[in-house]
Each structure stands twice: as structure tokens, then as C-alpha cells.
Image (tube, rainbow, N blue to C red; front, side, top):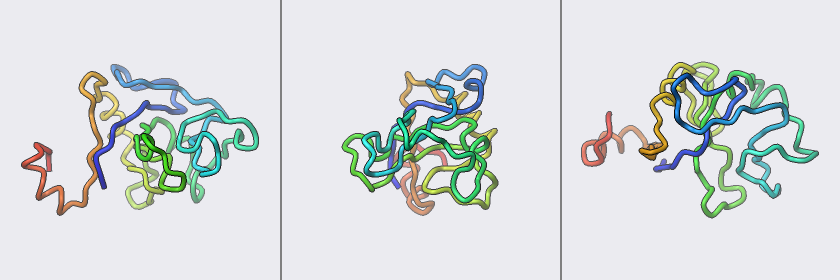
Length: 147
């Protein structure tokens, strides 16, 4: 739970959705988010040197990387004063389906992520607000959040 700034979008898709203004970088083989706590580039998107350079064809538990990482947004969680082992590589990304869990990311339908990327405007500094539903119901009116 918390309020998080959003960093760049990345993905294996050729580019961002048409009309998107959010910064986007197309990934090539080898790019990954470094979640190994002893790696110097922990909790960053990097094209690291071996032995971390080979990107597997599947992500967690056999989830296909080309779906999960078609396009995604890096969430600035544990980035300002990075604490190794306190969470890394938190993303907004397409889900496999509504019943397949993530490893701490926010999954959504690919069409929802496309709509989000089309909506996000760097000049307006959008934030990710994640709260338990009962807290959202309580605070949404005072924070001006939809619910």
C-alpha cells in the first residue's frame, strides 16, 4: 500500500501506443529488471553484464515474457533510498489473466495498460495510489479519488 511515482515505460512492443506521451524505451534481448539484492544495479532496468545478461524466455512460474513485458511501467518503489531486499522491480504490466497472481506488481488487461499509457501525461505527474479497498472507500472522498 502506498502512493508511488511512476518512472518510464518499457517493453518488447515496437513502441508506445499511438498518441502516448509517457517516456518509452523498447527492450531488446538481455534487458531485465535487476532484482538480485547483491547486484550493483539492484531495482533498476538494465542491460547488465554477464552472468545476469541472459533474459529467460519465461518470467515467474512459466508466465510468458512477451505478454507480461509487452509494455509496462516501472513503479518508483524502493528507489529513492534503495534498501536491498526490501522490494524491487515493481511494475504495472499486462496480466496473463485475472486469476494469475503477480510477484508484487499491478497486473491488468493489456487494453487497460494501453489506455493508461495513452492517458498518462508527464506534465501532470500522475501517481499510483494503492490501498486496501476499505481504506480507499474511507479516503477517496477527501483525496478526490474515484472509487
